[in-house]
Image (cartoon, rainbow, N blue to C red; front, side, top):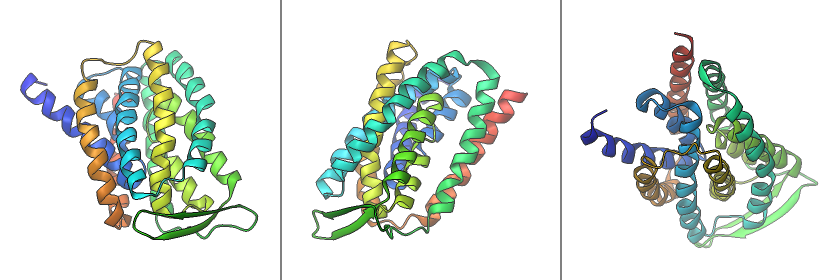
Length: 267
């Protein structure tokens, strides 16, 4: 790719990645990592590492934007974020040991499978559950949210997200956000709180991958600028958008990227 096109492409890619994460609760990493591999000729681990830094920047901005809306459940978000840490660190070291077409094949399969989760959970309501953790949150617009969280479901989704993200660096939030909705979070609270969890997870993944020397320092600033804009814009869009149809469209697109990775690893 020519230098004239490189910077705009990186800005757009960073913006798109974080818009998807902020509006849909996930999908940005599943676009970013395959794109860096397919179109920027990155190794799998370099793409994952660079993606972690971009997502960390975007998650920081979108968490701040959502906090101004009063829709972040900080207590549960920090608990779930902490639960992602062991899997994120362990997964990074496991991923570092796996190289080449086999890893790309597995990554492609994981992306295709996980991309289908939001489609299955789009219409799931936050009905809560008896015996769960009752929560009450009033946002900055005066809307009150009463919900009950089934902690076993939320904990399982957080642990699975940490390991999946640490190993593959993509589609982790596509596990987390549907899991939180199934656990009983209202969708708007799930979207906002998932950004806090993603911030904890992606910062841990970024530090671990920096330690392993995998982050592309040259591309990261441009991706991060796009991510900053995407974080602010996405939080505004998510407040008013009914994202059911958009979720299905994006899931289909992510699946195509996964299929492209599978084909690249085979041929």
